[in-house]
Length: 220
Image 1 (spheres, rainbow, N blue to C red):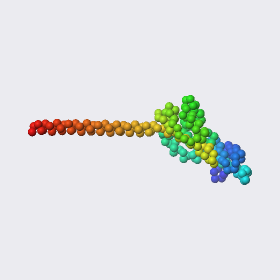
Image 2 (tube, rainbow, N blue to C red):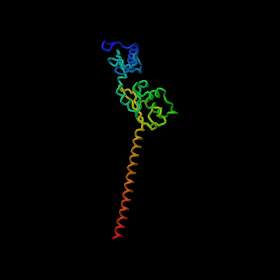
Image 3 (spheres, rainbow, N blue to C red):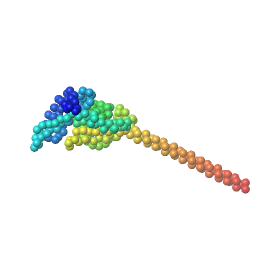
Image 4 (spheres, rainbow, N blue to C red):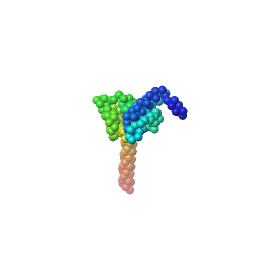
């Protein structure tokens, strides 16, 4: 413990020691990260550790306990968008706390390729630390609350110390684009109808004026 930060929650010392031992099996400077876990108080943590050494041989290790909820809090602004879902996988393939709850539950359950081919393919890309984009059909994403439109999924790995241990995916619904498209089409249709009425009125005015002019000439 540290006098400034107070006592470490029960169970943290054992996890820190385990992370330090694992770090000693890696070359000095390479980062070891534990899976996410909860300590007393409900906050989620991870242990980060690295070996120290000389001449390429580890002579010791240092490990720190990190509150990952605060660490990844900046990702919450993405999750606040109603038309977007965020999935952030840690180094052990477990969803981080900043992930969308429904999407995290699907990732943990490993969706079947038969019933959810798009979501299953997305999970495969994330676990393989691949980068790219793909479309997922509307029938698969209804359960995520993204409406009844196709979803564009963008995914990419996040490398730490040259190792791709994290993966991030965003799912963006096209329902907002479809709504905007429908609104634009409706406005164009209203404009076209207005123009048609104006043309009809103009033609009627021309016809009536021509008839009046003809009658006036006959009277003369």
